[in-house]
Amino acid sequence: MELQGEREKVIIVRYCEIHLKGKNRGYFEKVFQENLERALKGIRHEIRRLSGRYIVEGFEPGREEEIVERLSKVFGTHTLSIAYKVFADLETIYQTVLSLAPHAGSFKVQANRADKSFPLNSMQLNAEIGARLLAARPQLNVDVHDPQHVLYVDIRENGTALVFANYVKGAGGMPVGTAGKGMLLLSGGIDSPVAGYMIAKRGMKVDAIHFHSYPYTNLQAREKVEELARLLAAYTGGITLHVVRVTHIQEAIHRSCPAEMMITLLRRFMMRIAERTARRCGGQCIITGESLGQVASQTIEGITSSESVLESLPVLRPLIGMDKTEIIEVSRRIGTYETSILPYEDCCTVFLPKHPLIRPDLAQVVREEAKLDVEGLIAEAFATEETLSFS
Image (spheres, rainbow, N blue to C red):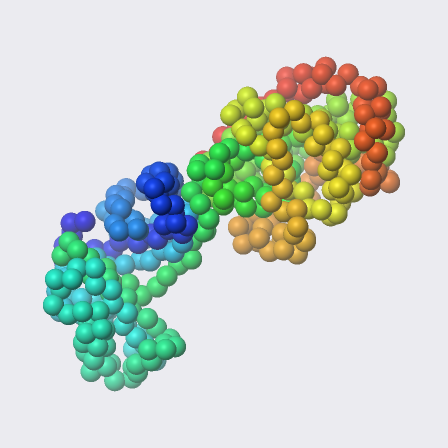
């Protein structure tokens, strides 16, 4: 970590649970650094690992806020700080702290001395710099318990020090790509993007599949889903979106089966198509935005009906115990809410029955489905598949 000039702006990146991984820690650190690099694509930079954290340096002046904004969305990131890297001598450290210090209010200095050859220990460094700040700015006062401002000094082993005055909260979780790969059923609503976000936070790589009913649903509804995929991609390290038309399936159900079974039967087709797409793409599970009891298809009977058609893959439901208020809160925080509420209908609103089945009987569902050419309809759906990539 060579110093370019008297002082240099850098970004400190600290990670979350990776430090608990024992002998596997190196693997998680490697994936995490790859994800950091991917997030900074297009920005000149260098990333160096430094004792349980990473330092981003060598970037153009003025881009530090953009870098922090991008990296704060990388799962595995605990906190970030914009810092000055300086030579580890007392005067240089003090002058840098002074440039970050407030002119009034309470403060404390919090030093960490990784380099034990530095002449002052942490407590002595706190006292020395604090005393100099009080002399330079009489309107300041020390409060070591609940200060308004904290000034941090980190003395490293290589003759440099990191000086900073803020922590930015990161996305938390585990690095994407360390927990397998899943296929997200992505509608245009509020729930499914949040489900994708939450499962990616646990380290799962996410691809997505979207079902549309053109011409009953318009192109704006599809564009809305593409925008949701783009927003999610900032957290998931990119997304491949599979777009499949199911208009003909809905029309076949409408012609041959009771109206109240439309959603139940359609969900079964969606699950089959999603599973086959996932297996083709290396996916190991299906991910949905279902929340128990939220809508008619999300009763335990409805969930059982749709899941019973799967041949081998499990279904993960990150939102199953959350209420709508909690889901909306997350969607606002991750920036998908305003897109999700745009008034464009998804495929589930086509041929929507006045009274959908709330607790479908599985035996009856299977009998009604037998009226349909299931494999033929699925093959026709796959013939419409389009694939888009978002990074």
